[in-house]
Image 1: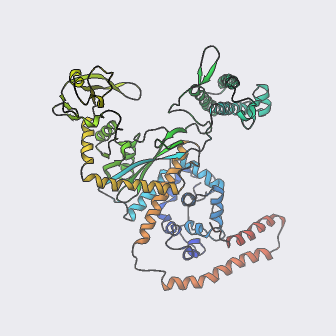
Image 2: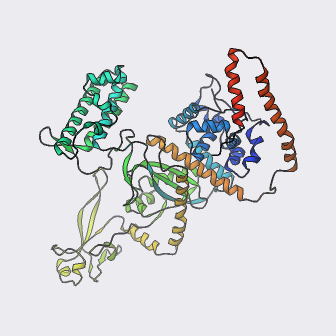
Image 3: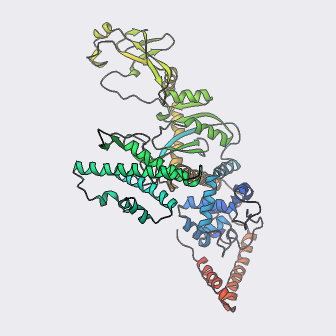
Length: 599
């Protein structure tokens, strides 16, 4: 049943007692002032039954706790303890001095409900509404957003082929053991798979890793055991009800093991197997988190995990949208969807989307143009090699001519196959400007143009996006490009703030839970931005009024007297065995509440 926070404040609430001590210009004081407008219990009524069960912890309290947990980077257990004993948390939560607002399991269950029902967007949207109330984010008009990505290190353990196969086998074994209701060791011995129960397969293999034949024999045994376990899973699935939880667990575990086999192992002649050379972009690098991928943020920066995409309003610096992609995804993948998500979340029309050269490909410009959004991004620079690049040729799309660095002009267009999508389907005819072989052979710049063993003349490809690329290069030479460079830095600053909030390392397994972590970090980044800008604005009062100071000075001794009297009454009251445990819990709670840990 939905529990609701009482709208009536009490003089014993943390924000009434400790607000001045904690600081009125802190993020904790900001949450104390704004929590009633940020979150309403009624907005989360769909997560609870209307009549069954006892009243829950108010979801508005748990939302504030999730924000504080992200802000401080603490664990669930530590969050529960801080809510009980930390005066700063009591100010933000509005909790009483001796109150323990929630326990660890309550916070975990609430987070799971938000993730399962995709309700975490309510918290992020609340930060946008707070920015509108504070006039940080505009309510109408157009906005310019900046796009960028950063890496997220995955939670799962990354292992090599041998240990990946062993982990995949063990994962399927655990599902089979749960369904057979036998002890793991007994079941594994009966199937001759007990050697997978150790801490490390490679550590316990006892082979000479410099011996190719020993490594080959171990890999063959792993592949044979993996195929045998998959066959056991296939048979067990036949005894499961269609669509049941048991069948779903078997399918997931078998799919991961089957993918590891397909991606890392190749069949040779006969029964011989070997480790496949090369790395696929979709390679599973962790059995514990199968959604992790190998990725690169740059040529020198390699990581294993996910990739975070961020959109930021360049005027207000408010984060308007976030998304989590595969670690192997290109930066511009899903960039249009991220811009449209920003437009939907803010209710504002996107004037332009700003990105670095990773967003400046021709197909991405075409997608934004079809959506009616202007994309401002640098054209990816081509590396200067031994020969002239395409950028050194002048292409006139109106006259359909091409002029080379030596001044030779050609209008001859030839077909050059088809441009294909990721699935290999042809989508557009490719054409090239062809220079005459005789003209190129007599040219003094021929050694700088193309390789000497080629008999035909130089070819320059003309893509379907040539006009957009030329317009982008002209924009890069205009004064407007300097403004672009200044505005685009905003997204880098906001990503740096999210990194401070712990987004570099994923706290959870899976992309959906990692997206929850990223949205919480974006929410806290927005709210701290609003709180900081609000504190800088001039106010009519520099501090509490004389009446507030008088009331505080008068009530503080009275509150301390009531608290001490409550504890003394429990100490002097005769107790029975049934009340002894309650008495022992109350006295330490009063003593620990007076201690403020130095976090």
